[in-house]
Length: 305
Length: 273
Image (cartoon, rainbow over all chains, first blue to last red):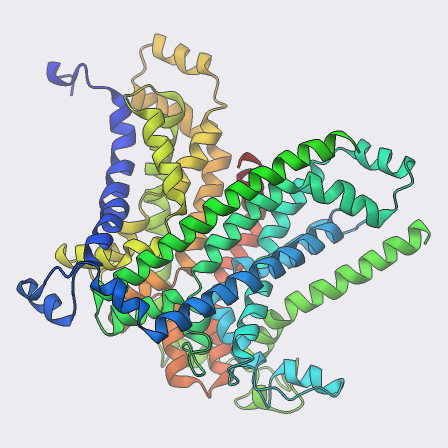
């Protein structure tokens, strides 16, 4: 082991090497290859014999623009991102505000209960919610029936299927952001609230003038993470609706999965994957700019309560 | 409102919120113990008329659920063990050792955190096909053996290890690998437990990749098997609920026992940005 040839070898490489090698081989290489793949007509025939593979330039992307299902999947994904994101952040914040006050007993218990859906398997709870949404026997329609609403065919009606999936996703995810908001709320100095209440601010004003601005960095972090996660909507429609009814819950990733792994149009599916990637990067950059503005705002507001 | 009344309102809201949160999981457990057909009765029941374990029996008997649980356990355990080792090695090196390109590589890695895993999924499938790993346990394990997120977590934590401690060991003639193994690993223990939890839960619950890479029924993990079961037994509500309970229960138990580490991890990730 103490050969002279390795005497000057930096041991840091031995520590970094395995992880970086694996990440390069099984993450960066496939991502780069995905771009090349999106420029080919890779399909079932090419899978059988690579000689059938041809470079076709941007034709997959052009075909995407003309594909009505792509626009449907894009619209559905944006619908999910725009509605489920803010909704789940609002629920997370509300839950965090309820759990943090010093007067709350059994804090740990409530936090655990709210967090429970986060650790459950998405497939398992999607199966459960399918039955909760059952038009005849489901718990939800029963509860709504008590106040003389419904019955609704939640997963069978194209107008209702996406809202139903959003409701489930909010239930599943809000606990995660709640914990992050709890950390943010606890780090707000108590004296800011004291100063605000001396100035005569009520609870509502304290919330808008102290809590919200002081949480700006948290909002930013939570917002970006939620955005990125929500763009990847897949298991919920896969298990609950298979993208239906009438493609009303077909998401970009579900469409990519079907094109790629059901019909083996890997070239076309890779183009879809890259459109998703581009969208996520664009939106993240946009949020980052807005986040910086919000953070600067927070510093000024926070300094003069 | 007096303080007392405020506290009361707060607790009522909390109790209501947590009831709503737990209700779907409660119904899942209750329905899994109902006699066949009872979960599809009107009005819906929240408690079985008599408790029966028949659906669990047919899952373990006829449907061989132990095999899927074994697959899940094997894949999640192996991925966790390997990735905690490799990520902690790399995370420590990024935090404390000097090597060419360290800052630049690290910046690139962090920037790449926004790349969704699905982007590379199709070529990854073709790559693993070339390597003969489709429909093997390794096929499910390999992409999770190292992660940028894991390296990042360990690095942030390892930054706080005092240099004096490491230098003292170096002066005593300890090799870098030995320092890592005997000094760094023990002092990073809390973050390693957190990372192990994240990885184990993430792998156990993962769906899309195992769905793609494990093509034969007997290789399925629990979530893939459950999704497959939906196709065949969708009318069999109580059976499906028993399957859902078996998929969710192990991970909920792990979480409840070790949640201190898990929550700490979520919070630290948020505060560091």
